[in-house]
Image (cartoon, rainbow, N blue to C red):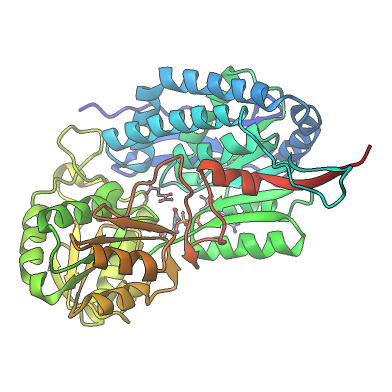
Length: 488
Ligand SMILES: NC(=O)C1=CN([C@@H]2O[C@H](COP(=O)(O)OP(=O)(O)OC[C@H]3O[C@@H](n4cnc5c(N)ncnc54)[C@H](OP(=O)(O)O)[C@@H]3O)[C@@H](O)[C@H]2O)C=CC1
Ligand SMILES: O=C(O)CCC(=O)C(=O)O
């Protein structure tokens, strides 16, 4: 395999032009599989660039909102077609920047294309209801109006799908946008914006400003001309976004962490449960907010499940995501690797048993990367840190319980409520789980990760701001309802 050495300087996109940071500072986007491979350099922007982007988005909003939603949808169809032509190149950039394997990166890029087409079609769907008025002569109905300028702050774990699932609905419903992508995956974001540029969007409708979270992200939170903020990322930053937006009366939407359980009942198809636990917990190196991290198994099948799970995990090949036989890539950054290793250490210190893995991998070809072994703990008690906090890495905590009731109780005993799965053949078990589990995504005999673009996505408790993204749910955030009464 040849390591690419491209290290181009990419630029911000503001008011339809490519511009650098006013103080000419840049930062590097590094390949987590090989820290000597610089994927590109990006502007470490100042608040001046953010202000320019917001003011051009504000100006562009006046005309953009006047286009028909079908016409706005046509622009999204164009972006989809352009992105489709660049699928392989952009997927490779994702793997180089973030580490997930090439098939996963390609799948994510195709998902982004499908999201663009889905929301392009939204331009032709209904946006209101006719409501009977008590006044015989009046016509009463609802319509929708865009928010204005929307600030979009995105993480590195889905570097193309998340920006697209926020930008596409924002744009089709008539908003203009300023995107601040994660530092780790800014090259992917710029390549995505190149597709918007090529599609011919009017200047100012789409803007991207790269730079640090504390300057550009915080600038979005505080900017008086940003009317709505949509965020995906950590619990800590999410709460900051929510508090800042609330304080100045801006609308906000937060998608944050998860501590997603899989419950394995006594009558489960164990092979299916093992495969789903591995795919849900370890794909993308466990760096999904929907990743399985707690595996709650009833005692009757615990030993057999554990044996099958470890046997399969031992077969996992860790390596550079660009290589064909790699199943699991590196952690997305050195910080992420260190966080994961510190959680593993905490698990051991608090008395859990390390059953498999737990080590950094830095021999041979993995020497310059941020690799860690897939890791499994047992004898995990529900109060332990590794059973409570989001690790965002390939670490599974096995928790043994006696009954299904106890399993659901343990599953709910965390501050998060994003996704949860059960493996069982019993309809009664399924129904109790569907009714009692505290999660926004409830899965039966299916892995906890992997959401469909046409369905609402979001969590309960502290996983989200109780709003939902994607599918038809997106209209609720990106528009306001107007209730109209017309008398002759
Ligand atoms: N729910 C999810 O899908 C995700 C959850 N996480 C969780 O977060 C942990 C840490 O990951 P991390 O990348 O640091 O996540 P962050 O929440 O720090 O980053 C997410 C986005 O917020 C930006 N940001 C950072 N600080 C601020 C700020 N003060 N104001 C506004 N925006 C800001 C980041 O910019 P910049 O990149 O420049 O710092 C990035 O664009 C992970 O271990 C995981 O637990 C992480 C990613 C996704
Ligand atoms: O499971 C998925 O496909 C989506 C996960 C996600 O949104 C995230 O990790 O941020």
